[in-house]
Length: 337
Image (cartoon, rainbow, N blue to C red):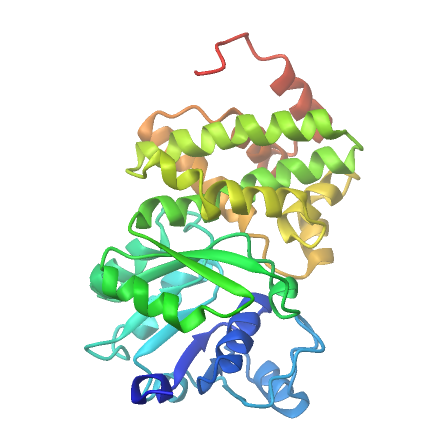
């Protein structure tokens, strides 16, 4: 292992995704320091050497856990962030005075700021003062529980600086975790966020017992509107065909392990949003991203019929069956529109 590889890596966020990334990096031989903002959770992680709540039976004996952000960041040039989209703003504010001049942030956040509609890259640049050249986004069909069991998995890391992308690629690449690079930061971040909205819709359909015809139609049309919004914001359409677009969409909209899919199933069964969220007991990024996507759709004059119905179910109390009926009874149009 080179001197560069021996440097510790900070992982911020001790949910299932952060825990999986910490486990993956530690398994690659890197010293890992994991930040949990809750002191009690950090104590439990240290004492039990596993994340019983979010990712049980995954050994964290060599991962140092602390609720002290400055202590976790000490000596860490490379910082992996795995917090929900709604939490990025607060964390970036804390990090403004803690980032080193040569710090590199690798974001695993797959969400948008609910009120401002900002991507994580925009928040890190605007709030933390991090130059975009020292930022990368990691995204793809990456269910945490499968990664830690060694299931063959692929992902993509996007950065505007090729060296940063390749550095992140080298950090995570392993025989069971294949990492591709991309320079379309906008497309990779939007693909990873917007697919969560579709996963809620897919969960509703599965909760109703709809079949393969319905799922195929939903994913096809929803991917079309994901791409329409992403390209309006500057993404390349080809990126949405990739791992952070179609790849993540397929996994998240089909897997019973997906929080967003689970949320949709519970909504179809008659639970309220609050009830469903409490039952899942983890952040379903699609809820905040739905709100953000509707804001962006209005700002950029982009039609998002599936997202609009998901928003009505989540925030206006619309019956999910009525939402399905409204989608099916929309005025006829061309498939390319």
